[in-house]
Image 1 (cartoon, rainbow, N blue to C red):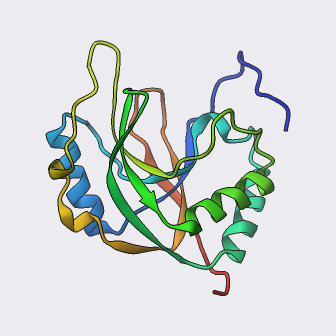
Image 2: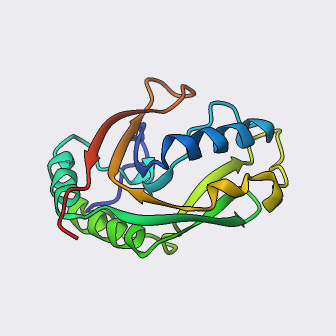
Length: 175
């Protein structure tokens, strides 16, 4: 895939896995306590800058989802990317296999750093430092295995708006 033209607007969509509703609710409460507004707990598979332009890639996404079986995911401990992002580690080989299948099917450009499965808790923003997040700030009940059953397409209507899940692609492959 050719590199994206920097003058071209970035898509405002991403692909992710969603934890089940009870885990999302507990994470939203913890994230709100950390000062994160409009928290949408998810495990990013393809970030906004990586989404191909146009919409022909959705057929490839459907194909990957239809050949991928649901798999177990577990949320781990708190970690950080370069002091700018706090996240929960994500355990489960299925996440990496699905990411690899999406890279191949969508023709994603090679990453400069390896993909690290994670669930973002907080991001440093201009004028707002990254909050410290101790493992105890996250309810222990979220650190249990759950079944990933779909890839969700998230989108936002305008810059600064909240992302919402707009379409789900069920994982229906044979185990």
